[in-house]
Length: 205
Image (cartoon, rainbow, N blue to C red; front, side, top):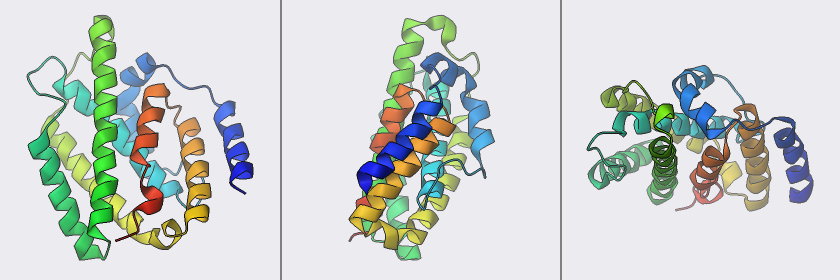
């Protein structure tokens, strides 16, 4: 069953040529706004995957806001604040807090993958570096909204995610079609794999 689903999902991926990292970096701000409220990924985990991809898009803006400044990619204090907030919100909505924290730790790791990749790209190709610096406060507000929406979607899919095979099949379908529809480049596809690593385990205590 999983093999068949993966083959079908692969057809979706093959049908769309991935954008280059350079194009992704240049189009990031527009892409973030264009995906809001628009279903791209297919399947019962499609909405969750769409939200994860939106968060990865925001990571492009985070990178643009930090590049060329003293702000580091690693921010342990901010990361812990986010995870503490997630734990409190997870308890409030009836999610297993440790599992929710594990899922969002993956989101943070995925964001740092994107930021590191873009920093390397822009350092090697200064002409492709962003010419404007997004407001980090506004970005964090957007990330907070995505956190709330992601927790709600984790809640609504918790029964599916507790079933290993159906969850794995739906995750393959959602991530493959979502990647294709959003024309994710290799960097963002790698980050998406990291961000969805614990989806099928994040319903557990």
